[in-house]
Image 1 (tube, rainbow, N blue to C red):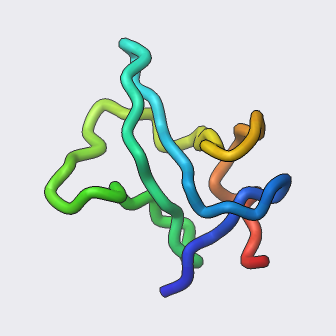
Image 2 (cartoon, helix red, strand yellow):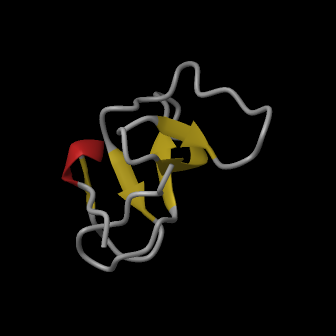
Image 3 (cartoon, rainbow, N blue to C red):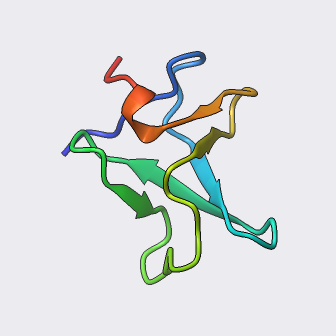
Length: 68
């Protein structure tokens, strides 16, 4: 399993948001699974269709992330 990277700044540090605007730190695997960075955290109620980069202003579909 490899972590996908932001297509703009090439960092794996991503987050997702829920309807209340709360953020949850995640990474995306090479099979496009969105996984919480901290073990035991749930992604229930979070929008997994859009990920946001912590390193720059990029946001988009997990399918737009790159390997390198």
